[in-house]
Image 1: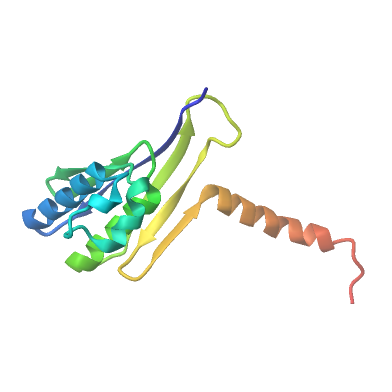
Image 2: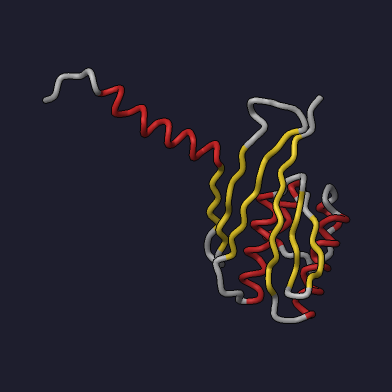
Length: 151
């Protein structure tokens, strides 16, 4: 059996300790209610409720803000949370981070990664597997048409 990992680590800079406390409180509630959405307090942001099952990351206070990190993934949830924080605290951005995918044993589907860029209005993500597929299609197209007569 192999263990799969999705790793990321980044710091979101915040203005003050009140913002940090808010982030830590929301993260604590999310971790406590990861599989029990119906018992969430009314203060928990509605737009994050659909991401609770994917909440597989940690947050810790750092001098300059909050450190987000994981070895288990949670990419969609962390992106939604960061976007919520950008909107709530009017953080100028974008905020960007990368992740890597790894495995404890050699597997053909185990390695890769991706990146996310988050603003108040949009979350853009790409994975290396999507990029490879897109590039492969682009390289293949000229070869497919190379033997056809020109019109």
